[in-house]
Image (cartoon, rainbow, N blue to C red; front, top):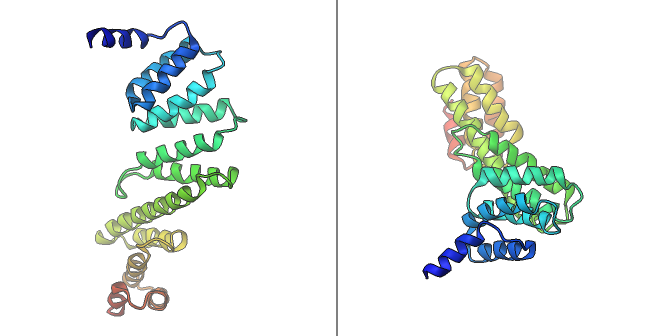
Length: 230
């Protein structure tokens, strides 16, 4: 066992055979040793930068970093690959990993949503550039999830303003949900708080219009019932 460990440690320094090194990295990934593969492939890139395996090793490292849940690294590597190899036949895959990396980087809806927006942008790029790729179906589902997260964020911030009686600011946030995220599960609640904000601002007609929309589109919603009391 000690001898095998010593041999593996020595090999991690990279051999003189580019093919052997690449196969070793592939073996690490096949055995789910993603962290070690990521480190090894970094050394590989330095030693075999101009070899026939260089581009394949770059893609392998993106995959290894992603599987190791090092999402900032997989994002960085994917962005670099897309810039350096704009005509590579597997760009759809790299674009997919980039979008997925941003998705994993995005935090709870209460937090900053910069990564969520990046994920949305990259998914749009994937759907636009590679409409026939095998990643389209999953990416569309991910896109809706990111829209839902953005909508929840706008609702969260809007309710914060509402609770602090800053009704102009809350109105603006709830209107974002109404105008941009109509398929989100929080749309009913956002419409209720939008109408309530209008009422506090003495904009009764605006409030009535929103209440009418809420009742018409979501007649069974608890938020429609609450709106009736306004």
